[in-house]
Image (cartoon, rainbow, N blue to C red; front, side, top):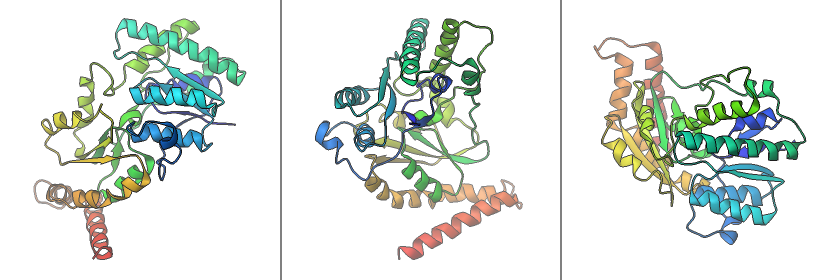
Length: 320
């Protein structure tokens, strides 16, 4: 059975699973854009090109998009003309969570349900819908957060291996928070979709939304020990948020940019290692090891500090 891929946090994956779909976030980084550069404008963002590469290479057969930016709208038009997909659908979500937007989204959900049900040959299963709601899990102990535009799986793995603390992926689709509330019972389908539309739009907002002040909770976390802010080349949404965060946080902050290829990710390893070995990060590690009073810290803190020093020393030896 083909997987149904999605790329946006506002995608109603619980609804798709209610019709028997198996959903997966499409977030792999290609080596290059051999296919995409032949069919798309060279200045669309790297993630849009990565989507085109995944479809044109035959990996993706079912794709649900949200009109989150001009690039995604362009990608949708290209893919619709290509005929490469068995199922392609784009949801039109407005840029706010007001009542009119919720009503509009509910209409879009019902349209997707009709199209997807006909494609799958299945009916809406309310029990599967309820089971699809899973409460988001977040790191509560000291950690480093990746913010900004979506970060590919391969680059995120590199970040995790480089940092002395656990790393939370809070970029784009990865900070999806649907599931904090369970669907109410004894509602008709239309009423259930109205409730669901409100849940989708009530998440931590992405930068496409008119009011994105709710994003402050991402960098006001008391367990946050550092921020890696990621942008994708030619993506405008997240370019200016970095400046605001820089002026409102005291934790160590690193800004990196990629074009969403494996090649560009490899070039960032040195900057990540330097950030992990910076004076601010090292001082935080020491505080975690010894505690703020100078006394011996926790065993967990010692392990983090020692692992960081061993990793940095190994990196220096291999590059000397």
